Image (cartoon, rainbow, N blue to C red; front, side):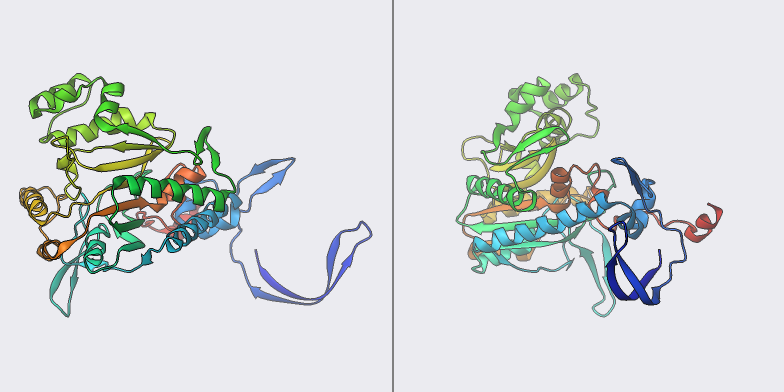
Length: 402
């Protein structure tokens, strides 16, 4: 484990092995621990560091011991770089927006709170990038994007980490279909540049990015996979009854949109293994999306799925300031009633819409989850170098006991 510097000359041994004849050796860094370096024999590999939590907690050891882990993070870096090159080549401008905000909106999530001493001001860590990027669309930036950290005070799972990397982009004079085409082109470009092919096989699932993604209507997909007909969502009571009929607990569900998304998660998502767009989401769960022109109660919103997991969320953006105010007022009322994931009313954002935002298409991609789905990682913690963990109580004492 020591790091040494040597001075000498290169030669070959009698058996033909290239070696260094050392004339001078200096210890550059002393290793005080036994490194858990893996071993390989006859094509089989034994991992030197297999404890999952230890790999997350001491990532530096994981990177030293497990080349596969290091390869995932090199691919992650390559995916982020390829994404930037793709968007830059299409005329998008990369920007930076505030992490500390007085009102954290743009997503259904509970924010982290902090306090600015000099300003004597309560602040929140951002939960999305959306509202400030839309302000830039109003200001004349027709194509903008940001890749940045966002923070959500919610549970931890194989899909969720409290801080994660989000790509959001907005394009003026674009709609939902334009954004779908952009997602297809982006994933095709990433597959080619990072993996060398438009067709990938991940955990036995073939992902063919050379062809258009499948497109399914949300309510049709629920009818197909859960047996719940669209007419059952016309009233809350019938929606709750349908939810109970298919084995889910309707307790606490107080809007049809939430029930629809619960059914989507339980019955539809696992079936979406190939790249698929699910379209036309309920208005209750899409407060920033434009209404569907012919289907009351739905919006021009879609989500993209790969290998049964959501990878992107996008829509034709709502640019009617009166409609947006009504929806924000409803969200604000829910927040006042104790729904900590509801959005606050943001007067400055509404003023920006009143100045005039052109028709716009927007997109959000969780980059950590995209890396997971393309590399075959089992958990989001496998693609975040230093995921959020409880502190070890006495890490050095634990080492001594071991």
